[in-house]
Image (cartoon, rainbow, N blue to C red; front, top):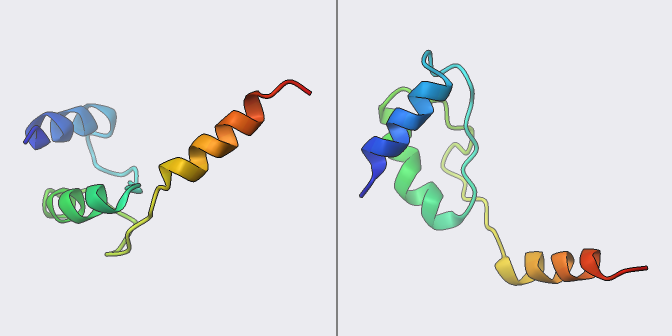
Length: 68
């Protein structure tokens, strides 16, 4: 797992960990929320997964790319 690299990147962006994080995608929430919270980051999910439906997003993208 490359968690240490992610943590280091986040620390570069917010050294004092003051910027709250929102994790998207259920598997990302389940894996990263406990690790980030343990390392002192403020994760706003609070145990709730935010699902990312790629098929719906793809359809929205396709519709938005159709010329009017």
